[in-house]
Length: 348
Image (cartoon, rainbow, N blue to C red):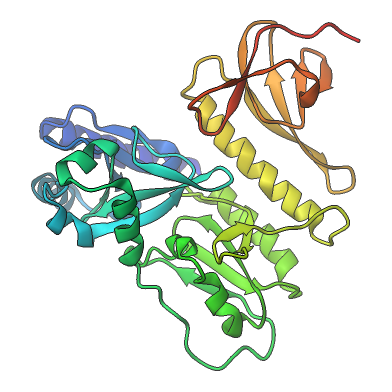
C-alpha cells in the first residue's frame, strides 16, 4: 500500500473516531488491519463494526451526516421479533469483544451479526437473555436468513471459476455454512466444487481436478495477503454431511504443497493476531519451501514462561527443536489453542 493511501486512510479513521467520541461514544477505536472502526453504541452490549472503505471520498459534511444518522439508527433491536430477520451468520478468524461463536473450520468460527443499515453488530451471549432465546435458535435463524441462492443455467462444458463478489448484502462467504450449499454448484463448475474465501466479500469456486485449481491457490493467497478484510487462503470442499471441510491433499497428492502452505499461512496470521493482544504469547513464523515442505515455527525468544502456539517446530535461541519434544501444558479457553511452557529443555 502506498504512503499517500495509508495517510488518507489514517486521516479518515481519525475523523470518524473523533466524530463518534464527540457524539458520546468514548470507546471508538480504529483497527487498521480491517480498516474499520469498532465501538459500542449507548445501551448496547454488543460491539459495532463500521467498515471504512465505503466512506472513502466523502467530504466532511457527508461524513458528518452519515455518522449522525448511524448514531441515531445503528442500535441493536431490544426485542427478538425485530432482531430475528436482521441476523446473519459470518465466518471470522477473530472478532472484537466476546461475541457469540462456535467452531466452524480450523482457525475459523461462526459468529452472528445484526445487519444494520450502515454497519453490523456482533451478537453476544448477554444479548440472548434480553431476547429470551437460546444460542442454537440464534444460529439457526441467522442461517435461515441467507438466500441460499442457486446458480441457474446450463452445466459447464469446460472448467470454469465462478466468482461471487459481495455487494454488502449477499454474505456469499457465509453460504459455506449452509449444509449442502456448495455441492449444489457442481453443475455450474463442472465437477466437485472446491471453494476459496480469501476475503470477506469474495468467494471463488471451481471443480476438483480442474487445471484451474492450482492457480486458484496462488490467486487466493494474493487476495488474502492484500485485503484489509482477509479471511482464509485455504480451499474447502463438502464433507460427508454436506458441511465444509479443508481440501484434503495428503503427501503424494499433486496439490499437497499448496494445501500445506495455505494451512500454515492461516495459522501464522491467526496466531499472530492473537499474540498481539495476549501477554506472553509467542509469535509464529512460516518456514520451508515447496521442495522441502512448509513448516510453522514458534519463536521462543528467551528462557522464560511463554504461551506457545501449535507448530511444527520451536526456535529456542539459536537452536530449533520439534514442537512435540517439549513438555507443555494446555491453556484452557483460548482460541486458537495455546500451551504453556516454563523453561527451555536442555540441549541434547
